[in-house]
Image (cartoon, rainbow, N blue to C red; front, side, top):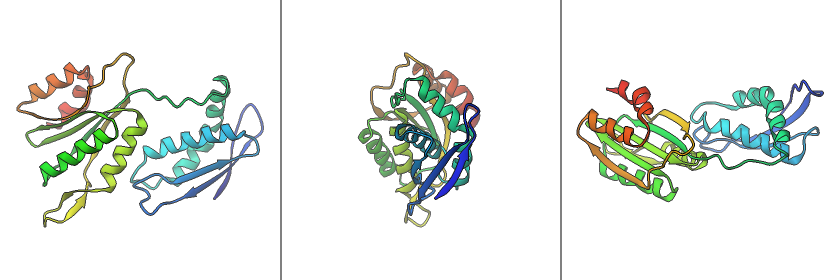
Amino acid sequence: MIQTSARSPAASDIGLRLVFDLPATYPSCPPNLSVSSEELTRAQCAELRDRILERAWDRLSEPMIHDLVSWAQQNCDSIIGNYVQDGGRLTTDQGTWTTLLHLDHMRAKNKYAKTIEKWATDLKLSGKLMFMGKMILILLQGTRSQIREYLVLQKTCKVDVDSSGKKCKERMMRVLCDMKSPPGHDRFPSFEVAEFSSIAELEKEFVGAGLSQVFTEHVRGLF
């Protein structure tokens, strides 16, 4: 439990009580969190809690408690201000997000690929698992909460085998891109596994999906 305060230019400091419960898999998954304050309503505390946890999802696999407390102190007033300006309505529709992941290798390729495809389908994510030579990319499209659930599975489940053939977790995944899809951008209709024979063919896939900038900024430099 951490008792702290956030400075508010429009009023006196806002007292915050943040209670973190760290699961056994922390920091591979975010902590459980409750937020309370005598200066804020229950709905405002819920909004602040959701925003803190949103940041926590972006800090997976890193010690994050100090960062989350500091972030809450610095951003509490703007979060509450935006909440009030929006008439006290909590906005949960985050729209469509596009996330691009890079995997270093797959030893048990067929089983690993089927696992990824099942996770994406179960979570109603669309996109592609793409192979091009030794290059392995996972493009995910869906709500941010769906993508976060996928990332937890990717980081906490035994999905491959090590050099001795024993089951192991994914240790070398990188998030290359995580962005909100522009308005009017079409999602892939489903999640598929695809093999590409050349860089040009792979680039054509990104261009056809309206993601040419993603390819230029995050994929081209990997070759």
